[in-house]
Image (tube, rainbow, N blue to C red; front, side, top):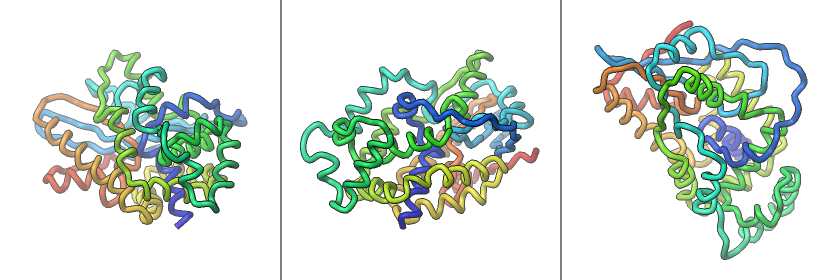
Length: 305
């Protein structure tokens, strides 16, 4: 179960954009790496006058991985607009009120007091390693502490949001004057996590703490599957990651993917070419966006390249 949840922590970088932590901690200096070519999976949904590309992203990557070329670049260039999970990344100043609204408990027991006694030492150690003031983290809600500790650990392993897919796509869209919109807001994303039960949030945090030191190697496996365009391999990792928490899986994947499939269904009624880029985890597995589209009798085609 522990192995499952530490993978769930790394999987957040496939599902969930978090500008708060990633804006606060500089990534560890990475050794000069040889440029490696990645060929991530790309799909298309179309009718007689509408084309919608579906591309799975990784929110943080190490430098030296090239992916914005070939079919992906052509699909982007051919599109009149881009749609991502939350559209244009909000300014950190705009994020702070959302953190206070959804992720902080200013009254009641501290987070340390809410944890099982046998997890408190590991929690204190993880907070110290992350370099976050302990008093501040102790007022975090469990889901937020888990996500921030995991994402900061990824940065310390050399993963950088400025090398992430969203950053590259946002820069390209700006250079091309391509409109960008979001499927949901950051307020909504934070709200989804905040709506998890206390039990699910505590489980998320405590089981992530058990193997936090392994987050870099575990995430590297996911990046490798993504780079090879192996959606089935990525799905297998994620199915294992989320098996121990049906509540988290439903919130992260099934519910959101169903809503996004509805958006795509509606968007097909309007002519044009759209490039949709969402976390790669949403385009793999039994509850993928493609599966939800199939339930609506909408065919999704993998683009070979």
